[in-house]
Length: 164
Ligand SMILES: Cc1cc2nc3c(=O)[nH]c(=O)nc-3n(C[C@H](O)[C@H](O)[C@H](O)COP(=O)(O)O)c2cc1C
Image (tube, rainbow, N blue to C red):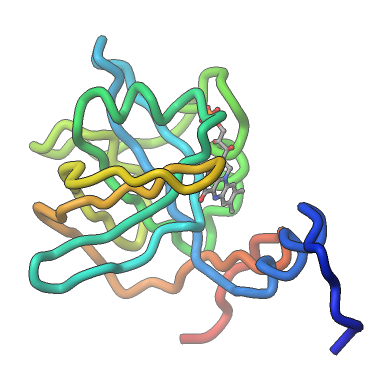
């Protein structure tokens, strides 16, 4: 362990929190005009089994989230081990993020990233303030999953999970 760091700077907090390994998901939805929206997140986590709730935390500076928020629905697409390029594409702010991205056509109408290892479709249940982010609680209406390994995120880098 290094010396105690106090007060905690933005850089130190990012570095310390980066030691928490996560998966990577892309939250997708539709703008009020129907166009597809998406952003990469690693703040996704399960919250409650009964009722079925998950959460994730979009930043207040996100240009994507307000459009999804206005429609009240979103999908969490959990990325597979081979989808690092998609994580990068959906981490860029603005621009045509969906160019060249393969989508599955599903009855719920929300963008479904082909090759994702799991998908949770949610209605927005609650939104709480969280500093420079919001805490979005989603009620899961349906899910899809398969057995392939996930993409991982650790200390600012993505890497494929190599064994399962
Ligand atoms: C692995 C990874 C995880 C991320 N997790 C989050 C997150 O949980 N919340 C968030 O607001 N941004 C997160 N970001 C950054 C957003 O993806 C990025 O700021 C967003 O796509 C900006 O685009 P927008 O302005 O079009 O919304 C993450 C980026 C990466 C690469």
